Structures are given as C-alpha cells and as structure tokens.
Image (cartoon, rainbow, N blue to C red; front, side, top):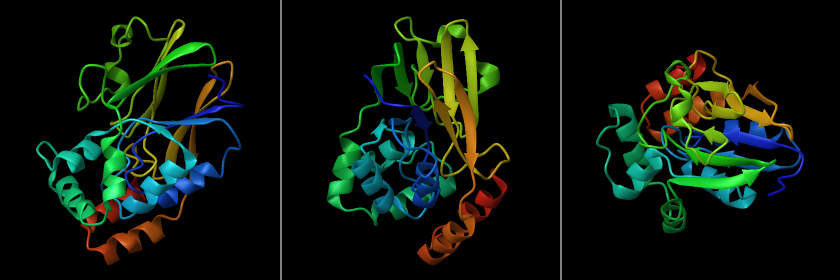
Length: 224
C-alpha cells in the first residue's frame, strides 16, 4: 500500500468530532488509521461516524463500539455505561450497521513494513498496555509495527527494527494534557506524537445540553 506522503495514527475519538476536525486540519494527504472507539463519552456520535465514512478512515472496533452493538456495558464504569445508553438513542440504523461491519483487528503493509492494529492488545481487546508494561514479545512474529489504543495515553516505543505505537486519544486524553493527541509518521518510519488544541468549551456545552454526565465535560479540561 502506498498511502501517500504520510501516515496519521489516531485512536479513541469517542464521538468528539470537534477535536477530530482540528486534527484533520494538520495534514494534507495520506492514510489515517484509527485504533478503535469511535463512539462513547462525547455528544457527537452520528457526526463522528459520518466523518469516518466520508474520510474513509481505516478503523477497527473498540470496546465502547462493541458495547453499543451488543447492548452490554458490563466492565464499563458508570459514566461510560451512561454514555453508551445515551448514544444508543442518538444513532440511526445505518450508523449502527457501520459499527457492526468493523473488524476487531486489521493488518496491512505500509511504507515497507507489516502493520497490525488492535484496540487493547493482540490477545485481549480490553487489556490496557501502557508504555511501562511493554515487552518485545507483545508484537506478533509476523508484524513489524504494532498499533494499539485503549489507554488514552500516547507513546512510541522501539524494539530494534520493530515499533509499538499508541497515539493516545483524540476525544478524551488522560495524560494530563487536554489537547487532542495523534502520531504522524513519514515514509522512513520516523514517528512523532503531536498535540492539537480544540474548542473544549464547545464540547462541554454540548454535553450539558445533551444530558450526558457533567463529569464527562469537566474532565476534558484537565485531560484526565
């Protein structure tokens, strides 16, 4: 696959179309990969799914996406469960069918490397893999670049010629930095984490108007 000038890796948009649009202003051409959780927490699920479809973003299923499809919020915290229930009432059948069409993982060749994308880990969609937990054996043998999401905390970790990338979260960062997070990669596999400011106040007001828990708005200002 020849993605063009660069590869953009994102994850955990969580229905925050405001943040996602700001990221899209930062690059011109290439391929965009998303490591799961299109919906949940934030108040723009329909708009976000439509953006994914229009932009042909390559994405996998995240645990919040799966919870909505299955109607099963077991394992999610109180706020996440409430957001899933709210989201169920604000999506049309076409959007739900789109989520149902997503795979739990994808593999592809990009810039001469074998790339695999999972939400949690290759073994478990719900597993949190933080940078301090990383060991080279987490990377499947037939993979050069492993892309993960789920933690909402970004990192790029190299093991000789292999790389593990977590772009953090577009829609709800949790590393103390409220700016949307993503990773930009060039054709030589130079990868860097980038942050983008967006109008958090606009999202917060929409959360208030929508009847979602206030905590989901206030945490955005703190990046927690």
